[in-house]
Image 1: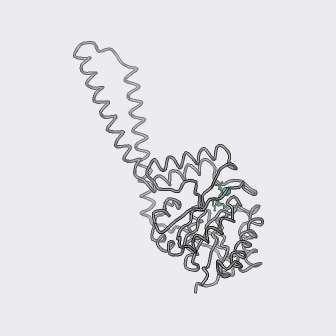
Image 2: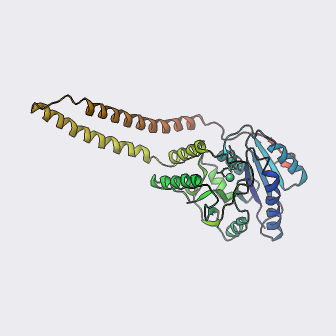
Image 3: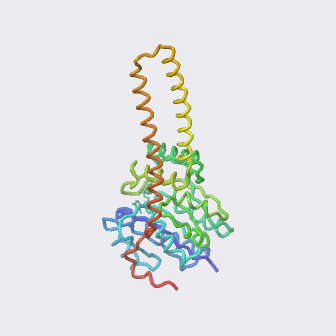
Length: 320
Ligand code: UDP
Ligand code: MG
């Protein structure tokens, strides 16, 4: 039996891009099916992430044109990671393999052939890895690379230069569904699920149209989510730093005491001010980091639904 593939595609305000890339995804599904690698029951599943433009309308029209297109719509914009999760969770009972990919044409869809081959050879997870970042701006390249370095320094296991272009088998998704956290950083969680994995490299192109939805603020947000969801090292670093500051302060106190006893005490206003500023700065940073984790715990304890689907295309049908 050939496996059923669902290509999961998050879309947020992509009306300029979708009409161009949707047929490419469809062609890919059809050509893989024609080559006998996947079943003709395979689908292209769009996840509308609460777009404000005509994206959902385009998806509904596509679903009317060809039964291979399916669409679900989130009740509001929840962010890229969440949209991918919604697509994967909705697809997992209907297919044998999923491939998640962005809808902007930046990821080379031809890498899917190799991904499916790897699956057929027995790999359950296949990470798409960018071979170069030439098409990214210097800024994007620099921030992305610093991020990977920071993550690995923090002891979080991530695949270098892998975004969210990856194949996952239904077996992996079934286990993945047990990772109940709402604080999502998919590419950090997938390696934790385990199973046999490999990588396929591809070159990343420029966005076909429209603008990136990952400005610096969102990238920083993703970086903080990544670190705090995968590692408690920052908390350990705070303890280490606290010990260091305590030792230095102790030496400082000794020194001040000796100077005073020797009667050489001068009004050290400047040094006093510096020390107070430094220590209060350190304390605030440490409190901030601890607060970050407490905030995450707070969100997790609420156990809010991780995604809410408000609409589905007419051809969605019931699960069999
Ligand atoms: N996206 C989404 N919700 C968001 C932001 C982005 O579903 O809130 C989708 C977007 O439509 C695209 C993918 O996530 O398919 C990646 O976004 P983008 O191309 O803007 O990011 P970049 O490639 O610049 O990192
Ligand atoms: Mg993009």
